[in-house]
Length: 331
Image 1 (cartoon, one colour):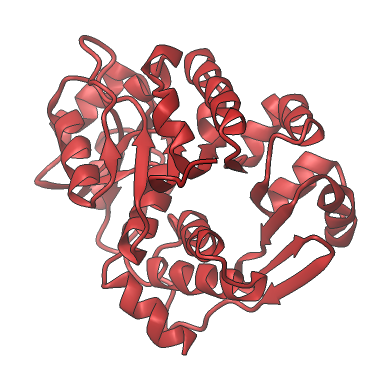
Image 2: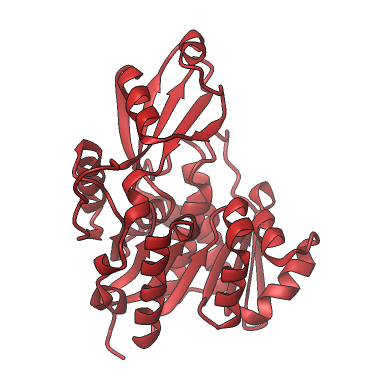
């Protein structure tokens, strides 16, 4: 087996978060669900974008956020996702490459436009989110570079992207390429509603030995296993997965691997500002430790530290020197 060129390559949604301040009255005028999140279509996305005031555009997407954390820690990473030939596609491409992450998938011509989450922030800090998945759900299997997948120590797959047919085919193709090269495959089901639609698929991947590292939270584990008891869920999954990582929010996280069990408490912080991206950055810290051969306990602790950084500010990308932040707290 050849030495991997990359530590982690990931397949996921390529999304731009567009964040603007607005009044409470404006939320009512636009007919939005204040404080909620809803999926919107292309026409709604264009209309809302035009209605926004001055905005900040920040790259997002679950797997892309994880890679941003990994790259900030010093890992070599690559991303496979789909943007369109438009302004937001250029923003996403610039941001991910500026983070030192390989990204070579050509932008898609025509509609739909690049995925975006339009976020209206009222004076009390409440965030009203409107998500259009756009071009990200049109990643074709042909866009996959088998050699790039084979050249990474870990292939990381985002469950959100399992829903649409084209990227699901791309991820299945990537699993074959990674396995043929003797690489590891990490997977997150992303959300319980994804599990509700694809539980049989995910359980089949587990039964076939296609997943080496599984990341989920306790609610996702319950949806996947059908077990309401936390320990019952662990007992069901652990024998079939080499490394199982389950997060529990403020109660910390648990990992099981090869008969070993490790647990970590949530890192204390002064104030939780925004939990968006907490799971993504937990995965970043854990995977960084994993590819560096750290102990299971250290991997969990690094994950918890990275999650604590991300929930201390708005946005799902690190807002400090993450490598120094983790190093200081690991000592």
